[in-house]
Image (cartoon, rainbow, N blue to C red; front, side):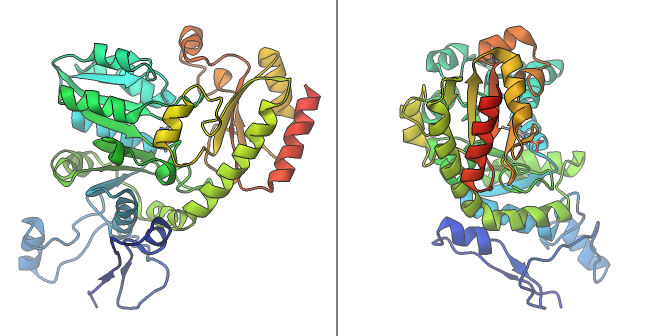
Length: 399
Ligand SMILES: *Cc1c(COP(=O)(O)O)cnc(C)c1O
């Protein structure tokens, strides 16, 4: 009983791919994917082991290298994204770190947009320079700054769009053009847009990374990440790194995340619809000085958002009148919306970036990024939209 059947079809639309893509059925014909909770694999004889190790037989060797449940997750998201290859990692940060490490050598240079998830910023600003890789942080929305930062040794450009937490939208196509001319690789962290609303490869990106912890799980259970790119780079640069340093995804997490992919379009569509409704409500409130939502015409980069995103966002940011004190009062008055630094969850979550996720970057860096003491980031969940609106309305009154 060693035969498995593999499912997949290039002509499927996204929702079908997300339910069936990459499934490997064992001879038992199970409906739901199997969790291959095993460290290693056995061989029918010494010759079979030899063939497995010298690559003549492409089967599995050890779960640090690859595992069938993890392969199913990789194949499913690879099919959705239209990428040649994908490798799953233990967390989103493992994927970001791996993508950057695989793209550079000591003596190289990296350019990144300033508005980054805190740990992504740490890798670019602090970690890479320790290993002899220089980095320049630019205002990602200013294309001239990207151009001006290019050096002969620039090997990677890195950005997120929309950004965390202020939801700036960066013109991916324009940055991809600069990367191409520089002979550098453009790495896009596509977490906030989700694979459903933005396809960085179609805009010219070379590498796409996700924290699967967010919308892909979507129910607050497992950490995970994935890195997608062309087959040659994944095989030559990413695979050896995973094999020898061990940031692989566990089979159990891969199984949870596979199940997450099945319902991803339903969840993201519903969360985006609700987020749009709440954004419109908040924009009309006098206690809200500024409302930032990529799906609205008053977003500072609304034209870029319309061009490169097919949907708004499940996230919104707002500046409350009255600074930290008012922001805390609003946050504490919420009943349904929970206080948490996570996002993309079934549960609506609120964060005060200045005192949590962006506390450690310091006041100056926060000011540069527009993260004032009144800024709050909201991740919209799957609750009834009317209940959420009433919760938010009540909390605004409590300010
Ligand atoms: C959460 C997040 C990460 C890190 O992912 P983890 O799974 O928490 O390691 C990276 N980039 C962005 C944009 C994120 O939101």
